[in-house]
Amino acid sequence: MKHLPAQKAIDYLGRDHRPLIGADRPVALTGRHFDTLDPASGKVIASVWECGAEDIDVAVRAARAALDQRAWTGLTADARAKVLWRYGDLLEANAEELAHLEVLNNGMPIGFAQWMVSASAVWLRYYAGAISRIHGKTAGDAINEPGRAMHAYTTREPIGVVGLIVPWNGPIGTFIMKVAPALAAGCSCIVKPAENTPITALRLGEIALEAGVPPGVLNIVPGFGPVAGAALVSHPGVDKISFTGSTAVGKQIVQAAAGNLKRVTLELGGKSPCIVCDDADLELTIPSVAMGILANSGQVCFAGSRLYAHSKVFDKVVAGVADFAAKVTLGSGFDPGTALGPVISDKQRQRVNDYIDIGRSEGAEVIYSGSAPAGSGFFVAPTIFVNKKAGSRISREEIFGPVLVATPMDDMEEILRVANDTRYGLGAGVFTRDVSKAHKIAARLQSGNVWVNCYGTVHPTMPFGGYKESGWGREMSSEGLDAFLEMKSVFIQLH
Image 1 (tube, rainbow, N blue to C red):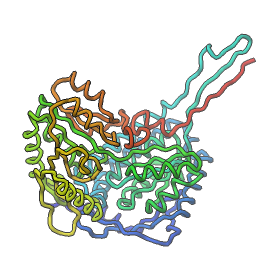
Image 2 (cartoon, rainbow, N blue to C red; image 1 turned 30 degrees about the horizontal axis):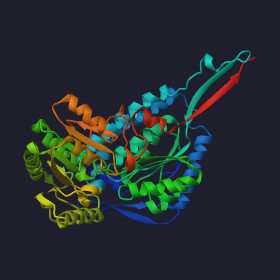
Image 3 (cartoon, one colour; image 1 turned 30 degrees about the vertical axis):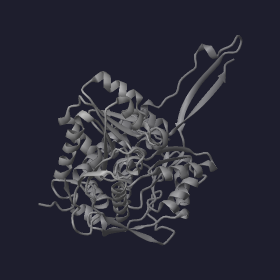
């Protein structure tokens, strides 16, 4: 029996969805709205005020005022930590509403949305604890000279006003992944959610105020990337941009940020390999490989979209993954048993289907191709190709859908060469019983994240980011906090 969205979530969708700037909920200065859809039905679920460049300027001034007035950094470290901890508590208290809003606006299965809310609360508490660990160092005697005593030390200070641009494939999780360390560092934030999924960002902004984040420290400005996003990136009053999205847009952000040399963190695309050795435990490997590409309908930056399996086990692995995919249920995220929801939009559905057609035209063998549910939702069924041709588009380009390309190989040197032969370097999976082999392969993979006998695990204590064109910098962990801090050296000559 299908579960229905909670009444609290339905009531929230019916509200007037204005931006959050300072303590106010002003109408957007553009005077325009845009519709946001339920990808499972294609129907409009809410109308949101559309921010433009003028709205971004107002938000930047509000964030700068909060920073200059020390509305947040003027609080003690303990007080700020308590606010972030309470923010996590309130996420859990509102977990049902948030998860249901995420399903309605993004389409993901309810279990995945519930995990996202729960993990976000954990991330907030991790950074609440990190606030008291922001400290500098003192220099030793080496800095002193005869007759010239010196006391020298470093401090770490918030970078300033930061623009946080959140994608549509994991709206709650990526919001908190950026906001939590930025707030822990003492920054003032302006969040530009994806135009496809603005709803939970606005709700998370309200909950932050309820938790005690001072007005102006966290501002939410829904709008479109080419207008609102571009204005945020190029604004001279913004000191840093943290962006998650496509590599193409990431390159545009680098160019736009040159105006005031604002700091930039980029978490971009991927074409991640899964390597299955001939000694792999297939009962563990097959579901891990399958969910590595099927989770969130393949709309994951580190999705394991390339499979390289030793020829001794290749047929078993591919058959097992195909059987797994055939048993997966596509449907509304509110349906019990749904493992795959829709993709985010009709445009994305067409993009994925176009790549499936490209794979067929390139001569790749279709091992499995499922059927999408009938109706107006944006569903794409899993497709598994076997492809032995080097350089094919489906093997090199990010599809961002439930499409796996499998290739049999025998020589580990060749597997590593092909796995690394990509402009991306975000994730990689290795499946083997041999711990020595696992370490050797992991050391040679050009990837920011390597998972052995599992796939896609993230945790706030571990940095997340990519090599090559998969991005700049790291999120999560202490490295994610450092990305929002500046280092200052102070020299004091003693008399």
